[in-house]
Image (cartoon, rainbow, N blue to C red; front, top):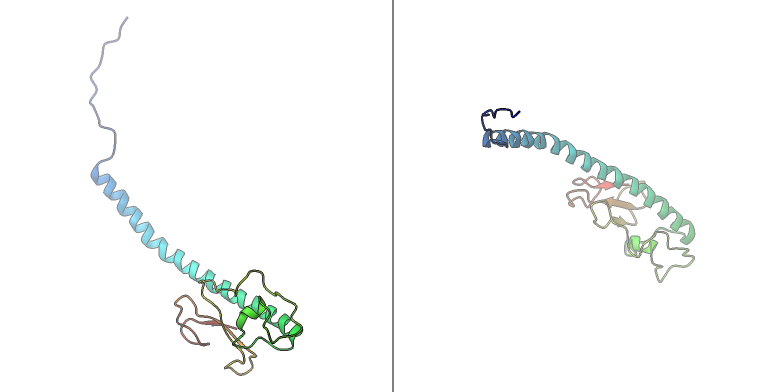
Length: 145
C-alpha cells in the first residue's frame, strides 16, 4: 500500500537579511560593551607587571652593588647586569639571563639613572608607561621605583 503524497508548503532554509542584521547588531553591542573592559584589564596587568619587574630588577641591582661596591652608572646602564663593564672589578655576572638589557612590558628600554634625581633614592629605574611619554618620575604615566 502506498501512501498518498501530501503537498507541503516549501520553506527555504536559511536566514533573512533582517535576521542577519539583528544578529550583527547584537554582536556589535556586545563587543562595544566588553572590549573597553578587557582593554582596561590588559593595561592594568601591564602596569602590575612593570611594578613587579622594577622590584625584581632592584634586587638584581642590589646584588650587583654587593659584588662591585656601587650601582651601575647611568652610562653603564642596565647592560652592566648582562655584560661586564670594562672598568669594573669583582663583577660576578651575568646577573640577568639573555644577551641584552631588559625591556619593560611595552617592549621599551627601562630608564635608568644613577645617581637619582630624587631624594632618598640611590637610582631611578622607570618605565615610560603605555604612552611611552613618561621619562621622569611623576611625569605622564611613568612607573618608577
